[in-house]
Image (cartoon, rainbow, N blue to C red; front, side, top):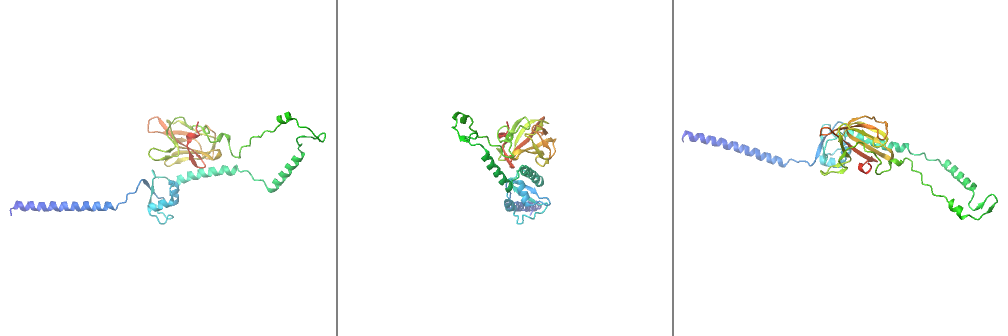
Length: 307
């Protein structure tokens, strides 16, 4: 065999070996891809020390059982710090501790005024005393159609009776209610003047908003939509600078993504007082904020209450 033919044969054998090796790697990679389980839409929540599965489920508003099933967790009360829990349908990672603190602040504020405004129930003795007084007053009250000066009956005067007929007085308002806070248009004032760029409810991309987004100029002043007590004033992860005000009738207003805050928690505030300024938008010179109205901690469409 000529020397050149031997060299060509060696090169061909080497090329064949390289091709076989590449083919085996490709087949191995394809086989491995079949065993990869790709999760659906959602986020991976990094578990912090002390966090439980129930707290994570409450913060993301999903069922604990669903999280346990998706992540194959057999002991929900034992989560290792540093591990990851997949949360289906979530769009961003939340700070569980801060979200639960905000929820607790709203719940506490809604329950507090109800206890303070609760009237003291009358005792049994007081009820008996009131009934006796009512009976005595009925006995002393002159009866219609009787002339008590002469001791005899008189003929009723139709004209006088018609003019003196008692009219039913309107019932007094229930304790704790406020006429100004009756649900409806104009119950709350606009926190800032601008244009609504995101409405309440389900969005075209499938997300659900509990707020409306108001876009206006940068550093615009934000005012309280109604008088009340500031129950939360601090930054929240994913919500920015946040202010929550508790109002009458178990209403609460939430102001998020502020550029700055100018009120403190536990302070009383009047309708129209400044609570902060708008944050910066992506466009130069433009600002925005998110605004919520809640009752019994349930989000309502703010446009139903704004003038």
